[in-house]
Length: 191
Image (tube, rainbow, N blue to C red; front, side, top):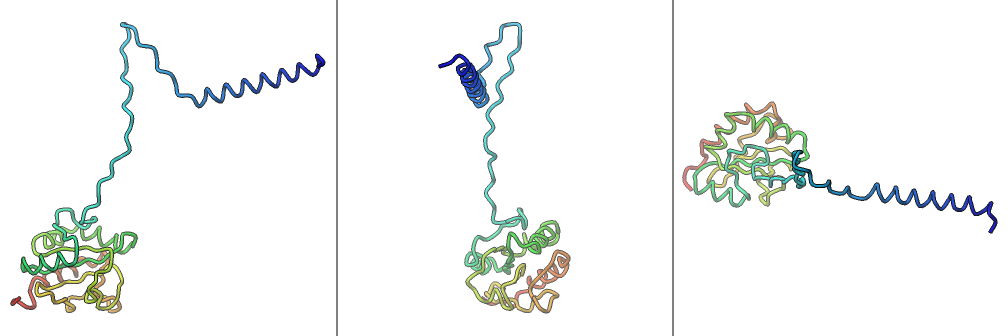
């Protein structure tokens, strides 16, 4: 080889080696620092951060953590019959803005929470239940259905909307509380 062609090739090879070494150095983990001498105070290595632990969702789903919630419709009906308390079923969806607003308003209202906690068997569901009586006028959400301990659906306890009889919006909490108070008066006292 000629001396003239060898020098540019050598330059290119050195450049490639340098780039490779810099690339490897950039991806390499830093080495531990040498042990400090007795004149300096050692800083402890920060503990490795663990992935945040997510809490499992409760049956409350944000509707009121101090309320004892039934897990299934069948369980709720049995509790209602056994305790002689009316059942209040809240049908909602997690991604529905109207459901979310009603949930916030219901959870923030002290009277609604007190009535729910003390006088009702409570159930909130995000999936339709097998009982067609839970959707007397459609499958919209949010809707609230009251059931007497004799397992009679209280169709007389409707909200204020004529096209969605059992719908409540965030501003309808006073109407919902009124219906909760009415639901406490049992339709059939003999079971």
